[in-house]
Image (cartoon, rainbow, N blue to C red; front, side, top):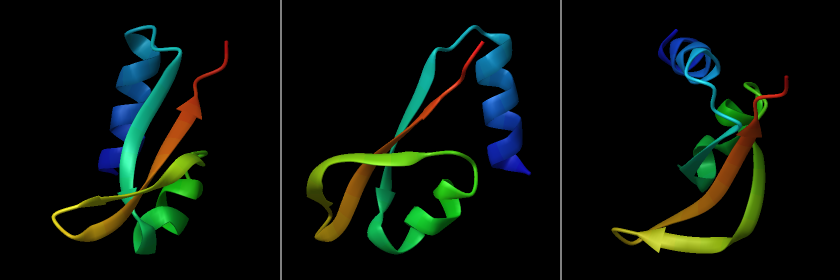
Length: 58
């Protein structure tokens, strides 16, 4: 519910794309909302993360 609201708000504000840093084990969750991975694995607090983005479309 929170993710749907953030995407809705991003569209309302005119965002072209949304970026986030996902823990590797959570990437499937974000993929369900249209996010795709990019870049290389990086570590935050010793936990592997991957950058993800979602294009908002027109």
